[in-house]
Length: 575
Image (cartoon, helix red, strand yellow):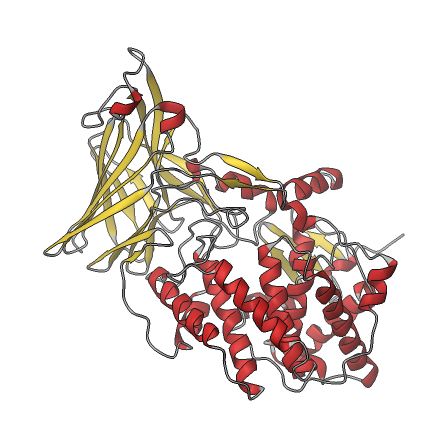
């Protein structure tokens, strides 16, 4: 009878067949298994690299808590957790899902294990060696372009502790497998529709040229990187996906590339320095009071120490600005209170393949406390949540009749969906004395309902009062609506899991994790507290949302209820 070397803490949520169907539908072409024709196998065969000229240096600190957990044989990804027996690798047991397997095969956890002292280093090398024994020649799932590029990058950043420690056969096998995977990626560079995989593949090409090939292929890799920077980074430094954590990731990757170029005694190209400066400026713009990133689009709360490390590496301090026009974000900051408003359209395909339909959604923070957010996102959380958190109802904004503010369409090249629009989205800003107004609007609900959504926000000079007004108005160009026609609407404010809400007679009391007291007040009847979830910290957390619902008049100018909904967040004086 076979020995079960793993213990799962959850019952299976779906059958392997169901998991395969879900993976294929929600991962698109990037989830399709790689193929190795006889010609391709010839391409990836070749000589074993002799040694590294130098090792690239990681720009982000390791996650010590995750490393400690892995050293205790606890593998946790999102809501799934398995406990391995006898220190065995997770791939020796049935894994909870293909998503779980994908995260394991990318080796994003490897540096965290290495950071656990000598015991961690021994375990990390053992896991790499076992992976090579099982998957090192080729594997359709583990050798997908994006997965392979991430894995090679993560191996290379571990440097000498991985490639110089152990017996001669072990070191040879690691270098041989690395070279084989690098040749595989080289062969895939012209046929990669996944922009995320393509970015990492090109960064790997630069490191391969400098660290292992004595500069061979450097000019081509650099040209490809420059083209990719131009395509994926907006002029204001935001990422083309409009996801803050993606910009942070690109910045960290460029730090590694810049350091490798400097250590190879080559001049750093101007475009790298320029894009680093712009990316760094946007990371500073987005950085929250707790030091992490906001969760707009497919972005998560990165570890604060990672953001801090990224900003410390900038050659000049980031300039302070409150509007990112190309990225479509506005920021209000007063007295320790910060609001960030999403007032930009969804990215164009393929960069919108992970974007959310969250037009005019906002995040509200007070010092180190997050108050209002969205349902968030995390690449760690199982893939079956991705579609749900992209919907408008998962954001702190207004929604009509359950319809998204930007409809989703299929990208035939990638097999994924992207939100289209909304049209007519913009925000105007007015500052007078110590007070700030934002007046924003979008026309995403004009085609189906003939209504414009307008959101006006005001923050007091001391930051203790945020007032808002959401209105739905029918433009004159639409002509009159049928008499008596109404549409159901809801204005949602998703609260961060660290906020404790209590429904009162005249307001909803909110207590933050730092003990601050806030109140939510509205003139709109029937404010409710409902359940919601939050994914931004890599697990599925229960939380609450404030919901203001009603029926909007299809022929209103938006100046009066029910088409005009007024609300406020008020900070109480400390006791």
